[in-house]
Length: 436
Image 1 (cartoon, rainbow, N blue to C red):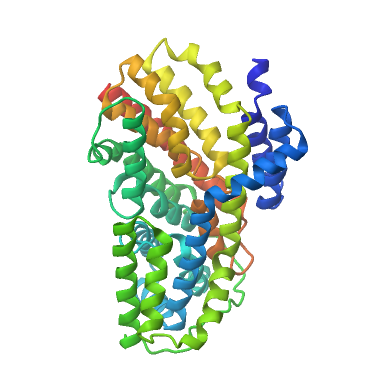
Image 2: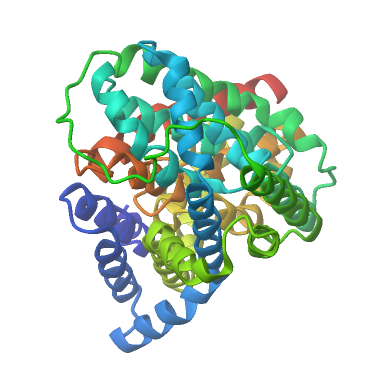
């Protein structure tokens, strides 16, 4: 028991959560937790910082993607497309708050699987809608849960866009560790997890945060002075650029390249004057720069955790308890996955770590292919919703806190943690029970 208490992973993740709950800035909390976890593993301070800084490069592509996608999202504002969409949504919902919440969840789903701008649409689309939410007295925590559902559930279930990447990672890593599966097997198993998340989404909207909540109607700066809701040539060019962004991303499996091509179309066909290029990139950095830097720091945190040996010792500690039954083994693997992903902040980056450790255990215990897929997918996804360093939580906060009335930890992380991690665990166990 002493070994689990002194495990660097446990120490650093618990400290990270405590610091964030005490409203310490996420960047500072990640750095402090990394240093403490590294020191707990026996490394000296200089070595910990070297590992931390070198590890930041692991998320360089992700950070670049967010900056370019931020610029792409900003272009939607400059062409007037995003404000038009916000106004059209306002005109449709009238006084139907649940319609608004479901529309936002639907747009979040499209941002993962059809038009892969990921979370970059949130700080563009949400601020103009805050006044509408205030009038309808919508609890923004329900909107945070709706956005998190749209950002997370699709890549677990739908094999397109980010979902194709996530499910491809699962398939490749399971195959590399000794089990023969096809990529098409993934979504046929993970639908169970998607169902659990959908139930968590409904509970958050219709039960937990259904009561009206009042906010001050503070002014939020937006670029929506034009009342004309008709689409013009520049809007169609922007939409074409979005489609091309998706095509290039799926073809090359490079999100930065897709975003770059989309921007090239927007400027090349003069939907936006090239003289505004500097301004647009600066706005992209302003929109997504903080999120991008958090992801870089999270990669440094992950590098320190991997080098600490804490993951191996954690697995070694729970392995003897796994051999008694599949359900006990499943619970232990899911809990460890939760701790790892809570710290790393990305389910995509957790898959290779977990597959190496879990696939041999699943083979030894006689887990079926669907059950193995469910355990790996759920263990990787657990903690992504609720992690202070996850784009699933950073994205909603970036839009909902535009007027300073939405707290990242208590209004985004805690609600999404409760409504998605609990269902993921329960439905993963249900899946193991069903598929064997």
